[in-house]
Length: 313
Ligand SMILES: *Cc1c(COP(=O)(O)O)cnc(C)c1O
Image (tube, rainbow, N blue to C red; front, side, top):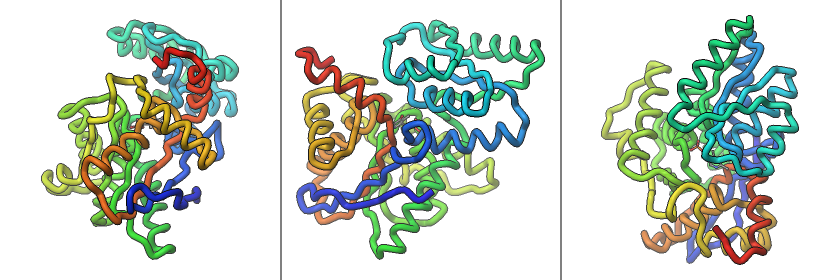
């Protein structure tokens, strides 16, 4: 895939570039689309005939997986937390794609998934299970490929990115980018802006994903090298998943007005805003900085509705 990378503005005297993963040409794109394309290959290779996955009503992952299932005429079942049932553009699309939604209390999610897989197997299906958010080695692989596109851009344009920023959630995108950096022995820093998880747990999950991936391809690297390369920044999560403040809202408005780039308050807007604060807080100067736009366009429209309301929560 060759997605646009281009320079937008300067922040202080730093040059800011953006990579538009949101323009991947399937179901509004984004990192979940990049991961889904690898899952689809596995599904077709293994002759699976239905898909089970997990995520909430606002999940970009579930929208894309249910779209892919509908396109391939495969039944799709989404296990969804009872606690988060808000109607969103993503949930409307899941319905449109005919996904079966099974609600479960968060603590019963694992059991509900197992039950569903057993039930489908008993009915004669061969279900393919995709972890929430496309977490796992295939998701990591997808973001090594993204990193390789960045390396290609650097070579073609004779530039080196000193920093790469993006929204880090389940940590799979983060793990892939760090694996890419380590396998290419590049010096640029990869900074995941956490959108929900705190340290030390959030960072440990990324490190575990990196180790798991390297093991699966029979590679090993010293732990201290992996540790040093994994920067998980938890200062900009506001008060948790999906929570926003006025800086994030201002960032989203500015990005669409000045550049025509849609962002959202859960992922990309929060991460871009976090990056701006990081640049100030860490006094970055005269650097080449790349922001990876990881998608989530339907969430931009969910946010747009709330901009005219007084209550921004
Ligand atoms: C899921 C998601 C992320 C986080 O990706 P992970 O691989 O889960 O860390 C970032 N941005 C958007 C738009 C997402 O949907």
